[in-house]
Image (cartoon, rainbow, N blue to C red):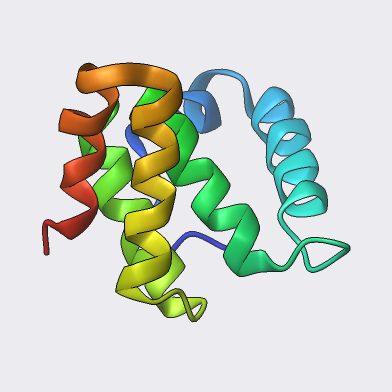
Length: 101
C-alpha cells in the first residue's frame, strides 16, 4: 500500500537514516498486503490504532485510504465504535476525524 506522499517522519529518515527507512518501508509493505485479512480491514485497523494513539490527522488520512480500499461509511463508523470501546472519549474525539474530508 504505497502512500501518495511521504510523511514528514519518512522524509527525515530518508535524509538521515535511509537504511532504517528502507527496512521499515519493506516491513510495512509486507504487513499491509492482501492476506487472510483484506487491505480494507488492515487499513481500518491502522485507523483504529491512530485513534487510540490520539493522531487526529492520521485518522483523517487513513479513513480516506480505507474508503479508497472500499470501506463504507458504516464500516468506518463501526471501527470508530471499537475505538471508543477500548479508548474511551479521547479516542472517540480523535476518531471522529475519520469523517473530516
